[in-house]
Amino acid sequence: MEENMDAADAPESKSLDQEALDQIFLQARTHNAWQDRPVPDSLLQRLWKTACMGPTSANCLPMRLVFVKSVEAKEQLRPHLAKGNEDKTMKAPVTAIIGYDTEFHEQLPRLFPHADARSWFAGDSKQQAREENAFRNGSLQGAYLIIAARALGLDCGPMSGFNKEGVDKTFFAGTTVRSNFLCNLGYGDPSVLHDRLPRLEFDEACRIA
Image (cartoon, rainbow, N blue to C red; front, side):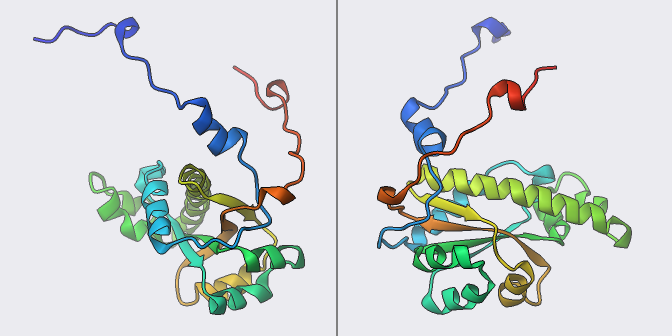
């Protein structure tokens, strides 16, 4: 019989080394200029398989993605971009449209089979709860996507500055998916980076209760 392990004897969790933390957070930057270097579809597939493992409420996984790569798709996206985002988006190897499915609950019998989670969100009276959960968890997954992309060696350029209704009509017509934000993906050109902007100190943004 195994003896109960004392908490003091439990193995410590392994933290990432400094190089990994630098790549994902501390030295990572938002890129606006891109090298002429393609991103293969296989890497985008790996990106999804990595990012989708992050936790969401009841494993609801509401994020839906369109990876805009082709010239034709880029031209469909162009008229919906703010002018300041147009050039960098046209030159990015990939632009991810991060959306969220407002009818995510229809997948819950498969994604969360050990409880009747679909009933928590089904029906007209639960519409606000569905939309809040879809947006919250879809945004959370969008953050996982950025972290996963950086971990896999890609640079990111997340942004707002687009016509949401136009993007929804162009890329999500006939679906229950709504756009949240955009993220350019590729290999950034570090020669045109601005100085890093300041961050708040711990005591300015946090308290321990």
